[in-house]
Each structure stands twice: as structure tokens, then as C-alpha cells.
Image (spheres, rainbow, N blue to C red):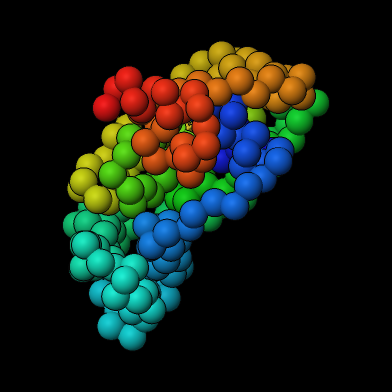
Length: 223
Ligand code: SF4
């Protein structure tokens, strides 16, 4: 199970079902592609391969893809360069992990970890969209820091860096046992085949809202 899968499930089990259990085609628009490219660009900079606002690696997006939001890539890059993370070499970038939780293995890849090997760590996930990210993703990263790399929970800070808003939102690592229990409960529900839809604001951007009756009803009631 990927971290993204767990996050998907805790947001809406039905969306997880249509994404991972019986996958249906999903819309991969320019926003997702821009997000991927920005992550790669930050990783190259972290490894010392990047130059300030490279001009030779412009993303080959079509005009149609960029329609309505020209210059977004440059704005996201400038946001990173203006952040407190620019110019700081992370301890790890794109750090992969496998975490055992009950009968499941959760796989993830942490965008960046700042700090020294023995000191406090700040786990950072880059966000290029406008939405508010679910805490579960960072909580799972924090759990990996504690259980795989042996960090003390009080030495782990979890941060979303919202590049589209020039904002960093941080939280301390919570109780690892409580996080683990929540994750394990979700994984057990997946194993038991519980995929009831949970509608909410996230239906607005769900690829399946066109044929999900519960999601459509929620959107109609909250238009
Ligand atoms: S439309 Fe809403 S309720 Fe339906 S699958 Fe998507 S997120 Fe879940």
C-alpha cells in the first residue's frame, strides 16, 4: 500500500476503490504534470545540479495545458527560492521507505528531510496545488522517521510547504502509537473490503464525481 493510497482511503474509501482496487481511468491534467516537474526541479537543486531559474529546462506544456494560468511554473519556482528551504541542502531528498503496519507494508517517498543526522528533523512535503493537504501523509512520514530511523517524536517536525501560497504549515509529530492505530484501522478496513463513499469538499476535485451518486448528491446540496 502506498502512502497516497492510505491518504486516499481515509479521505474517501470509494475514491480509493476506484483508484487502486478496481482502477478506472483518471484525468491527469497540467496541474499534476506541473507538480511532478516542480518536485524534480527541487530535487535537482537539492542535489546541487540545479541553477537559479534554469532557462534550458522549460516544461514542454502546450498552450492548452497552460491556458488560464500562464507563468505558474515560474511562480512556483520563485516561491521555493524565496522560502527558507532554498539554499539549504537537505539531509535526504526523495527518501524512500517501507513501513510495516500490522499485516500491511506501507511504501512512501519523503520529498525532503532537513536537519543533521543526530539532531532534530523537519520533514517537508512540497505542495503545488491550492488545496489543503490531509495530515495523514505527513503523519505517516513522521511514523517512518520514528520507527525506521529511530528519531524521537519530539525531534520531528512535519511541514507542508504550499508553494502556490508561499506558506509553510508545520505541526509537531504526534503520538506515534496513536498515528499507527489510526493507520492500522484504515488498513484493516481495506482488508475487510469496506469501501463506502465519504462525500465532502474533496468531491469537487474527484475524477469520479461524474458517476458517483453520493458525491453528486453532496455537491448538489452544497453548491
Ligand atoms: S465523488 Fe466524492 S464521494 Fe464519490 S468517490 Fe469521489 S470523493 Fe468519494
